[in-house]
Image: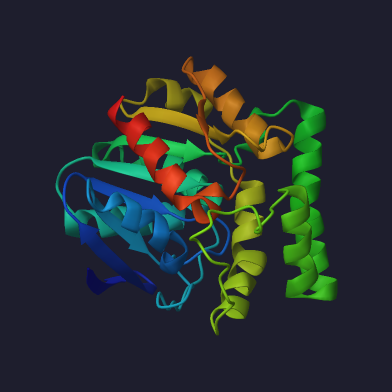
Length: 268
């Protein structure tokens, strides 16, 4: 595995490349750094050259200018891709990572061959009552962070996303929070959550995109609104919404099953 740091405007992006085969970029959700996608990457490295990274402001990706928009994160991954390949890449993003992947696809379609967006929170697709619930969920997280701090705000995230870290593959142990846990979570709550809440797309651009866009959703998360976003994105594109094992965070809890399903989808 090769470890590198790329200087980009306002930040230094800590990233890793492992494996061999066509290039596949993994974009974590939440405040996940590269370590969060390690298990998934290891299950894919026999078939793909896998690029993982710490998003701007997380862990090894130090920044003088925290990202205030999803577009900044998309620009970062675009610059990373340009150092690794001149060919269109496979891109997998989950949750917030899926939103970044979609933004990258629309801004730089020449860099993306196929994108799999797992439960990306494209809230503008939701019917008005459900959209109001989704926006209020984000606002509650932000208000809780401002009044009660990191722990209660993350607990509310876990509640509305129905995250169950005990539902995991037997050989995939629970992660012990390290020294980057608190500062990384603070980046999500202070900067990324407002960016997610306010982000919108020109939805027509998805239908006109030359990129193969594959919406995906967890088989166990049909009761949460990000799953509905994936279904509605698929309807908007006129393509199937591909079922993936587990729930919203299955790529971290069930990396082996996710890797198997991702390979199926990418090569179908």
